[in-house]
Length: 139
Image 1 (cartoon, rainbow, N blue to C red):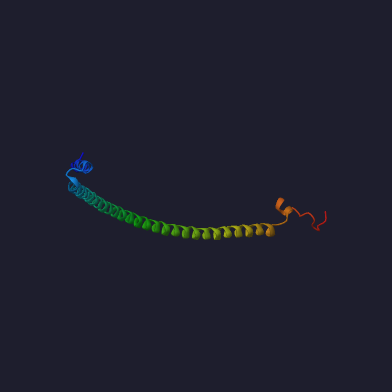
Image 2: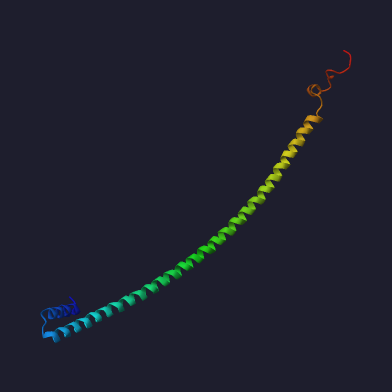
């Protein structure tokens, strides 16, 4: 037990037994009030000190958190810019591929048309120099 706790117990016993009459009881009550007020004051000082320490610690942590959030914001901005540039590049290359595909399809259609409309009849293709069937030459 602490010294204050023992003196409080002693003062409470003195009040209970009313040692020294009414004046003694009143003196013991006053001394008890002073002792409890002193203890309360010390506890409040300690509490104030603890609250100040907590404020300092929380302030430091909030500063660290704010710095980390700023770093995160900068990283997100960089990632967004990079993503936008990549998307723009993909769109550009897709357009180039579409144009190239259309050109290939166009060349294929032109080649197919050329093969269909400019080729000689089938009989001439099979036997070179042979008369074509269905011609007006006598047999």
